[in-house]
Image (cartoon, rainbow, N blue to C red; front, top):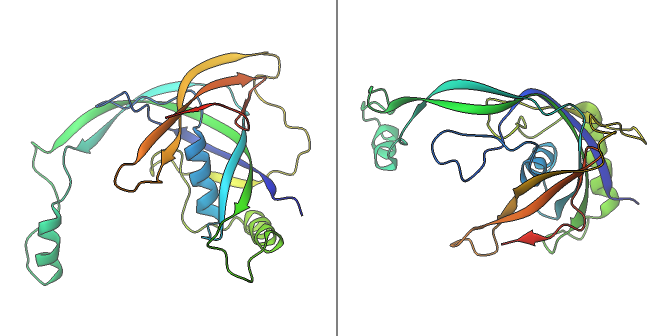
Length: 220
């Protein structure tokens, strides 16, 4: 049984942050492979399998917009959580004017993609696990619109709507464009050493609106 699947995803806004932008966020031109994997894992995740993204189809033109958002500069201290959990009435939130800042973000708007991916079995699969079982579960969840948590485009405030893509031929917004170099993009994070998680990058080349990841060179 084929282990590949196509998923159509769309939404009003997206923010796939460039890591070189330290303060004010700026999105990549298109969805990153790690963001695509995160959407698929939100639909179905199991320790006995892993998702591998093969292609990303850009179905709508790349459009940017700028917004300003209120953010906080720090996190709630973990040392304050336990006393509050034990009944201490201390306030567990950040509300001072010095903590709240307004930052600009460059977002993508009106986005739509098709994620083409497949899954592989891992050594954590049980005896009863097999590709056919996983494929049936995935297809059923996609047709019903089920997910473990709401998938999102880079940030949780930009939710993803999704459905199973059953089209044999997918038309992109750039069918007439032979090639566009989008530069280096984040591919994924290497978790092989939990104490030293490393980013991985690749040169994103979009051909006729399709980013093919099957044979791309990954740089660590």
